[in-house]
Image 1 (cartoon, rainbow, N blue to C red):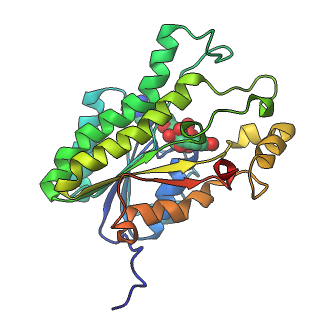
Image 2 (cartoon, rainbow, N blue to C red; image 1 turned 180 degrees about the vertical axis):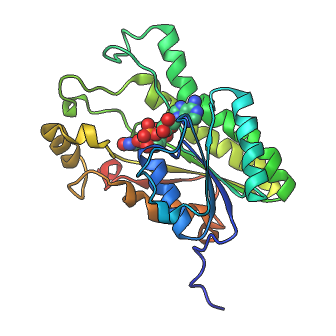
Length: 262
Ligand SMILES: NC(=O)c1ccc[n+]([C@@H]2O[C@H](COP(=O)([O-])OP(=O)(O)OC[C@H]3O[C@@H](n4cnc5c(N)ncnc54)[C@H](O)[C@@H]3O)[C@@H](O)[C@H]2O)c1
Protein backbone atom coordinates (compact mmCIF):
# COMPACT_ATOMS: atom_id res chain seq x y z
CA UNK A 1 0.00 0.00 0.00
CA UNK A 2 0.96 3.60 -0.53
CA UNK A 3 -0.88 6.16 1.57
CA UNK A 4 0.57 9.38 0.22
CA UNK A 5 -2.59 10.23 -1.76
CA UNK A 6 -5.15 9.91 1.05
CA UNK A 7 -5.83 13.67 0.91
CA UNK A 8 -6.42 13.64 -2.87
CA UNK A 9 -9.68 15.20 -4.08
CA UNK A 10 -9.23 14.49 -7.78
CA UNK A 11 -12.61 13.73 -9.37
CA UNK A 12 -14.60 14.89 -6.32
CA UNK A 13 -17.53 17.25 -6.86
CA UNK A 14 -17.69 19.71 -3.95
CA UNK A 15 -20.17 22.50 -3.16
CA UNK A 16 -19.07 25.34 -0.88
CA UNK A 17 -22.01 27.47 0.27
CA UNK A 18 -20.91 31.00 1.14
CA UNK A 19 -17.73 30.26 -0.80
CA UNK A 20 -17.33 33.88 -1.88
CA UNK A 21 -16.79 34.87 1.75
CA UNK A 22 -13.64 35.34 3.80
CA UNK A 23 -13.13 31.74 4.94
CA UNK A 24 -15.16 29.91 2.25
CA UNK A 25 -13.13 31.35 -0.64
CA UNK A 26 -9.85 30.16 0.91
CA UNK A 27 -11.32 26.71 1.52
CA UNK A 28 -12.53 26.57 -2.09
CA UNK A 29 -9.03 27.55 -3.25
CA UNK A 30 -7.49 24.74 -1.20
CA UNK A 31 -9.99 22.19 -2.52
CA UNK A 32 -9.13 23.22 -6.09
CA UNK A 33 -5.41 22.77 -5.31
CA UNK A 34 -6.14 19.19 -4.22
CA UNK A 35 -7.84 18.44 -7.55
CA UNK A 36 -11.55 18.84 -6.74
CA UNK A 37 -14.22 20.30 -8.95
CA UNK A 38 -15.76 23.08 -6.87
CA UNK A 39 -19.11 24.88 -7.08
CA UNK A 40 -19.52 28.00 -4.97
CA UNK A 41 -23.03 29.23 -4.16
CA UNK A 42 -23.26 32.76 -2.79
CA UNK A 43 -25.37 35.88 -3.11
CA UNK A 44 -23.06 38.09 -5.21
CA UNK A 45 -23.84 38.59 -8.93
CA UNK A 46 -20.37 37.26 -9.81
CA UNK A 47 -17.52 35.81 -7.80
CA UNK A 48 -15.76 38.83 -6.24
CA UNK A 49 -12.50 39.31 -8.15
CA UNK A 50 -9.26 38.38 -6.44
CA UNK A 51 -10.84 36.00 -3.93
CA UNK A 52 -9.57 32.96 -5.86
CA UNK A 53 -6.61 33.42 -8.25
CA UNK A 54 -7.73 33.17 -11.90
CA UNK A 55 -5.10 30.53 -12.70
CA UNK A 56 -6.72 28.16 -10.17
CA UNK A 57 -10.29 28.65 -11.42
CA UNK A 58 -10.48 26.10 -14.28
CA UNK A 59 -12.46 23.63 -12.14
CA UNK A 60 -14.54 26.30 -10.41
CA UNK A 61 -18.19 27.13 -11.09
CA UNK A 62 -19.80 30.13 -9.41
CA UNK A 63 -23.58 30.18 -8.92
CA UNK A 64 -25.47 33.19 -7.63
CA UNK A 65 -28.13 31.78 -5.32
CA UNK A 66 -30.17 32.58 -2.23
CA UNK A 67 -29.89 29.68 0.20
CA UNK A 68 -32.41 31.23 2.60
CA UNK A 69 -35.12 29.82 0.30
CA UNK A 70 -35.65 26.14 -0.50
CA UNK A 71 -36.16 26.99 -4.17
CA UNK A 72 -32.80 28.75 -4.28
CA UNK A 73 -31.07 25.70 -2.80
CA UNK A 74 -32.79 23.30 -5.22
CA UNK A 75 -31.88 25.42 -8.24
CA UNK A 76 -28.23 25.75 -7.19
CA UNK A 77 -27.82 22.03 -6.50
CA UNK A 78 -29.40 21.07 -9.85
CA UNK A 79 -26.94 23.31 -11.72
CA UNK A 80 -24.02 22.05 -9.62
CA UNK A 81 -24.84 18.39 -10.30
CA UNK A 82 -25.29 19.02 -14.02
CA UNK A 83 -21.94 20.79 -14.18
CA UNK A 84 -19.85 18.48 -11.96
CA UNK A 85 -21.65 15.21 -12.84
CA UNK A 86 -22.13 14.37 -9.14
CA UNK A 87 -22.04 15.96 -5.71
CA UNK A 88 -19.69 14.22 -3.28
CA UNK A 89 -19.08 16.82 -0.58
CA UNK A 90 -21.01 19.78 0.83
CA UNK A 91 -19.32 22.51 2.87
CA UNK A 92 -22.13 24.30 4.75
CA UNK A 93 -20.15 27.51 5.15
CA UNK A 94 -22.76 30.21 4.41
CA UNK A 95 -24.12 32.14 7.38
CA UNK A 96 -25.73 35.47 8.20
CA UNK A 97 -26.64 36.72 11.65
CA UNK A 98 -28.77 39.76 10.97
CA UNK A 99 -28.48 41.29 14.45
CA UNK A 100 -29.00 44.94 15.11
CA UNK A 101 -28.06 47.36 17.86
CA UNK A 102 -25.93 46.00 20.66
CA UNK A 103 -26.86 42.35 20.16
CA UNK A 104 -27.52 42.12 23.91
CA UNK A 105 -29.74 39.19 24.93
CA UNK A 106 -32.04 41.48 26.94
CA UNK A 107 -32.57 43.88 24.03
CA UNK A 108 -33.07 41.59 21.05
CA UNK A 109 -36.52 41.62 19.42
CA UNK A 110 -38.15 38.37 18.26
CA UNK A 111 -37.66 39.02 14.55
CA UNK A 112 -33.92 39.67 14.89
CA UNK A 113 -33.56 36.61 17.11
CA UNK A 114 -35.31 34.44 14.50
CA UNK A 115 -33.29 35.90 11.64
CA UNK A 116 -30.01 34.95 13.32
CA UNK A 117 -31.19 31.41 14.10
CA UNK A 118 -32.35 31.06 10.49
CA UNK A 119 -29.07 32.44 9.15
CA UNK A 120 -27.05 29.87 11.09
CA UNK A 121 -29.09 26.78 11.95
CA UNK A 122 -31.92 27.19 9.41
CA UNK A 123 -29.69 27.58 6.37
CA UNK A 124 -27.46 24.67 7.40
CA UNK A 125 -30.52 22.47 7.97
CA UNK A 126 -32.10 23.39 4.61
CA UNK A 127 -28.88 22.93 2.65
CA UNK A 128 -28.39 19.54 4.35
CA UNK A 129 -31.96 18.32 3.78
CA UNK A 130 -31.78 19.18 0.07
CA UNK A 131 -28.34 17.58 -0.52
CA UNK A 132 -29.19 14.20 1.00
CA UNK A 133 -31.20 12.90 -2.02
CA UNK A 134 -28.16 13.55 -4.27
CA UNK A 135 -25.89 11.67 -1.86
CA UNK A 136 -28.36 8.80 -1.32
CA UNK A 137 -28.40 8.37 -5.09
CA UNK A 138 -24.57 8.04 -5.04
CA UNK A 139 -24.68 5.78 -1.94
CA UNK A 140 -22.03 8.04 -0.42
CA UNK A 141 -21.57 11.61 0.68
CA UNK A 142 -19.76 13.92 3.02
CA UNK A 143 -21.21 17.00 4.74
CA UNK A 144 -19.06 19.48 6.64
CA UNK A 145 -20.86 22.02 8.81
CA UNK A 146 -19.42 25.18 10.35
CA UNK A 147 -19.49 25.68 14.10
CA UNK A 148 -17.84 28.45 16.08
CA UNK A 149 -16.05 29.06 19.36
CA UNK A 150 -19.42 30.24 20.66
CA UNK A 151 -20.95 26.86 19.95
CA UNK A 152 -18.62 25.57 22.68
CA UNK A 153 -17.91 28.43 25.09
CA UNK A 154 -19.55 31.73 26.03
CA UNK A 155 -18.19 35.00 24.64
CA UNK A 156 -15.75 36.77 26.97
CA UNK A 157 -17.28 40.24 26.73
CA UNK A 158 -14.23 41.76 28.44
CA UNK A 159 -12.35 41.22 25.16
CA UNK A 160 -14.90 43.22 23.09
CA UNK A 161 -14.16 46.95 22.71
CA UNK A 162 -16.90 49.54 22.26
CA UNK A 163 -18.82 48.89 19.02
CA UNK A 164 -18.13 45.14 18.85
CA UNK A 165 -20.33 42.37 20.17
CA UNK A 166 -21.35 38.76 19.74
CA UNK A 167 -25.11 38.26 19.47
CA UNK A 168 -26.79 35.47 21.46
CA UNK A 169 -28.58 34.01 18.42
CA UNK A 170 -25.24 33.42 16.67
CA UNK A 171 -23.78 31.19 19.41
CA UNK A 172 -27.10 29.47 20.03
CA UNK A 173 -27.51 28.74 16.30
CA UNK A 174 -23.94 27.46 16.01
CA UNK A 175 -24.30 25.23 19.09
CA UNK A 176 -27.44 23.77 17.53
CA UNK A 177 -25.48 23.11 14.31
CA UNK A 178 -23.13 20.85 16.27
CA UNK A 179 -26.12 18.87 17.53
CA UNK A 180 -27.62 18.76 14.03
CA UNK A 181 -24.24 17.39 12.89
CA UNK A 182 -24.45 14.50 15.38
CA UNK A 183 -28.11 13.85 14.55
CA UNK A 184 -27.56 13.73 10.79
CA UNK A 185 -24.38 11.63 11.17
CA UNK A 186 -26.44 9.05 13.03
CA UNK A 187 -29.39 9.18 10.65
CA UNK A 188 -27.52 9.12 7.34
CA UNK A 189 -24.64 6.72 8.11
CA UNK A 190 -26.61 3.87 6.59
CA UNK A 191 -26.52 5.67 3.23
CA UNK A 192 -22.73 6.05 3.39
CA UNK A 193 -23.03 9.74 4.26
CA UNK A 194 -20.62 11.22 6.81
CA UNK A 195 -21.41 14.46 8.67
CA UNK A 196 -18.81 16.39 10.67
CA UNK A 197 -18.27 19.96 11.82
CA UNK A 198 -15.31 22.29 11.41
CA UNK A 199 -15.09 24.68 14.36
CA UNK A 200 -13.03 27.82 13.65
CA UNK A 201 -11.78 29.99 16.49
CA UNK A 202 -11.13 33.70 15.96
CA UNK A 203 -10.62 34.55 12.27
CA UNK A 204 -11.53 38.26 12.20
CA UNK A 205 -12.05 39.85 8.79
CA UNK A 206 -9.42 42.35 7.52
CA UNK A 207 -11.55 45.36 8.43
CA UNK A 208 -11.93 44.08 12.02
CA UNK A 209 -8.19 43.45 12.18
CA UNK A 210 -7.68 47.22 11.96
CA UNK A 211 -8.75 47.41 15.63
CA UNK A 212 -5.35 46.78 17.26
CA UNK A 213 -6.51 46.41 20.89
CA UNK A 214 -9.31 44.00 19.89
CA UNK A 215 -6.79 41.85 17.97
CA UNK A 216 -4.50 41.80 21.00
CA UNK A 217 -7.42 40.74 23.22
CA UNK A 218 -8.37 37.92 20.82
CA UNK A 219 -4.75 36.81 20.40
CA UNK A 220 -4.28 36.72 24.19
CA UNK A 221 -7.23 34.30 24.41
CA UNK A 222 -5.31 31.75 22.29
CA UNK A 223 -2.48 29.50 23.46
CA UNK A 224 -0.62 30.22 20.22
CA UNK A 225 -0.80 33.99 20.77
CA UNK A 226 -2.32 35.01 17.44
CA UNK A 227 -5.60 35.22 15.52
CA UNK A 228 -6.35 32.65 12.81
CA UNK A 229 -5.67 33.27 9.12
CA UNK A 230 -8.00 31.65 6.54
CA UNK A 231 -5.24 29.26 5.38
CA UNK A 232 -5.01 27.92 8.96
CA UNK A 233 -8.31 26.13 8.25
CA UNK A 234 -7.10 24.38 5.10
CA UNK A 235 -5.48 21.31 6.67
CA UNK A 236 -8.62 20.44 8.61
CA UNK A 237 -10.90 21.26 5.65
CA UNK A 238 -8.97 19.02 3.21
CA UNK A 239 -8.75 16.31 5.86
CA UNK A 240 -12.52 16.33 6.45
CA UNK A 241 -13.33 16.46 2.71
CA UNK A 242 -11.02 13.58 1.83
CA UNK A 243 -10.76 9.87 2.55
CA UNK A 244 -8.14 10.72 5.19
CA UNK A 245 -11.12 11.16 7.55
CA UNK A 246 -13.05 8.11 6.24
CA UNK A 247 -13.65 6.71 9.76
CA UNK A 248 -14.88 10.01 11.24
CA UNK A 249 -18.50 11.06 11.51
CA UNK A 250 -20.60 13.01 14.02
CA UNK A 251 -17.65 14.90 15.45
CA UNK A 252 -16.10 18.37 15.62
CA UNK A 253 -12.65 19.40 14.43
CA UNK A 254 -11.63 22.51 16.36
CA UNK A 255 -9.12 24.93 14.81
CA UNK A 256 -8.79 27.69 17.41
CA UNK A 257 -5.16 28.13 18.41
CA UNK A 258 -5.99 26.51 21.74
CA UNK A 259 -8.71 28.92 22.91
CA UNK A 260 -11.19 26.27 24.05
CA UNK A 261 -8.51 24.09 25.66
CA UNK A 262 -7.80 26.75 28.29
N1 LIG B 1 -14.57 34.48 10.62
C1 LIG B 1 -14.63 33.91 11.81
O1 LIG B 1 -13.95 34.35 12.77
C2 LIG B 1 -15.47 32.71 12.05
C3 LIG B 1 -15.33 32.06 13.28
C4 LIG B 1 -16.09 30.94 13.54
C5 LIG B 1 -16.99 30.49 12.59
N2 LIG B 1 -17.12 31.14 11.41
C6 LIG B 1 -18.07 30.60 10.45
O2 LIG B 1 -17.40 30.33 9.25
C7 LIG B 1 -18.29 30.52 8.15
C8 LIG B 1 -17.69 31.54 7.18
O3 LIG B 1 -17.45 32.75 7.88
P1 LIG B 1 -16.76 34.00 7.18
O4 LIG B 1 -16.00 34.70 8.24
O5 LIG B 1 -16.09 33.61 5.93
O6 LIG B 1 -18.04 34.90 6.85
P2 LIG B 1 -18.40 35.68 5.50
O7 LIG B 1 -19.53 36.58 5.86
O8 LIG B 1 -17.19 36.28 4.90
O9 LIG B 1 -18.92 34.51 4.55
C9 LIG B 1 -20.23 34.02 4.61
C10 LIG B 1 -20.77 33.98 3.20
O10 LIG B 1 -22.11 33.45 3.23
C11 LIG B 1 -22.83 34.11 2.23
N3 LIG B 1 -24.28 34.04 2.46
C12 LIG B 1 -24.99 34.65 3.46
N4 LIG B 1 -26.30 34.45 3.28
C13 LIG B 1 -26.44 33.70 2.16
C14 LIG B 1 -27.57 33.19 1.46
N5 LIG B 1 -28.82 33.43 1.88
N6 LIG B 1 -27.35 32.47 0.34
C15 LIG B 1 -26.08 32.25 -0.11
N7 LIG B 1 -24.97 32.70 0.52
C16 LIG B 1 -25.15 33.44 1.64
C17 LIG B 1 -22.33 35.57 2.32
O11 LIG B 1 -22.62 36.30 1.13
C18 LIG B 1 -20.85 35.37 2.56
O12 LIG B 1 -20.09 35.40 1.35
C19 LIG B 1 -19.61 30.98 8.75
O13 LIG B 1 -20.45 29.86 8.94
C20 LIG B 1 -19.18 31.55 10.08
O14 LIG B 1 -20.23 31.55 11.02
C21 LIG B 1 -16.39 32.24 11.12
